[in-house]
Image (tube, rainbow, N blue to C red; front, side, top):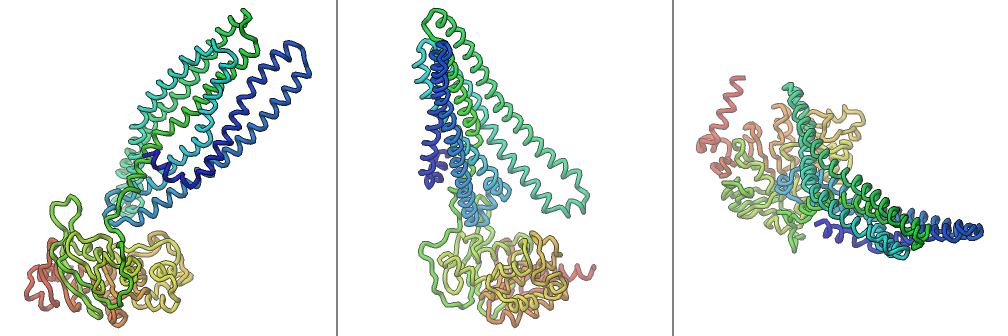
Length: 577
């Protein structure tokens, strides 16, 4: 997976990578020229007392050193450029892929895991690319050319390399093999610690209200301790690589000096050649160190690339139509025909054989106990999920055939859990209609019963909104979410239990203001509170995903026991209160 991921995403940078290879080749060749020149200085300059020769060869060594430094800097610069742009492209690709996911895929991976994959996992692969461009390219060049040039100095000493290099490869291979499962486990534990932290930050009010800080601290400490233990285990394995290589370098150097001393004393080898061979040996084994350092990053990058590829290869269950329908009259009709839906692996469907139609000017309410499938039903219209049986039609066209932008423009959805983005009141309202005027936004705020508190905020429409709407109350957040949907003026409104945080007076005022504002649109309201839906033109009663009642409030009280039980339970609660 790692090779495939690198091949596909580094293809646009082939020319720069080729330039990096050329730069690394030149700087490696320049570095490998230095030991030979040093040998000539010793043998023909120092031993012969030829100062002119020493100066000329010294100047040549200085030239090669400057070339090495300049080309190495250029190679690192272009290598880092490739790595950074590779990471940018990969994150962008992942982000667009996640944006195409339906709620089903997001739920399967989990938000914490997706965040980790887009950030930490991409970073691991990006680090590998940096190391490959700055170290891994130069290492094999140095090893191959260095071996050739070392043999030019003396063949007999090469017996040391015959033993040193295979031993290094075997030992390092074993260590890398042990690191792979440790890194895989570590990435999963990063997911877990992100999940725990996200839960605690999101639910901080619940934690404090129930005084659960010690328990949550213990839960986070447990996740953190497990991650620490795994990181230490993988770190110990990684740290064992470099001492191993250093021991081999030192032992090899001793062996070369021991064998070379006999060759020098017998006149078979010159002193300069022995020094040059020793330098080549160090360069070759240091290249092994650089290759080892890069190899040590491969296991973690391999695990990360697998997790990234898993996201990239996941086909969204809600796919855009191959031949989208664009030119559809704006009618504002919503129809469901024998709709069924079940989650993968679930024992029974969430919705079964459900049919209804709502038209412009009509308000259809959906009521039922918790888990009856109300929110899932609403989510089928904007294709947060796709039906597993039956058909959902908007303006007479299957939503699976409509162009996504065309479908989005038809619908104004207020989700069960309202969410505001960091920015201003205006930027949140314009999220549904980027070109909305101030007059349109104030009109929507008036209908949503939010105009008064917005005017009281510093800056009014330009008042600051924190991430998630943390600086406004639940009721204010809900009303701003309603206003955001109203600004678009869609042909179909979907209110998924959007009035639950409002008091009875605000609820009544808002519903009264909605009537003229949505007169030419179809309105679907999911609600728990019977008073919110009592005046609806049609009420649908769900039980275990099936339609068990349909009619007006009065008709259902008389004919639908499930609806009557819901009404009676709420009347009883209010009487008790």
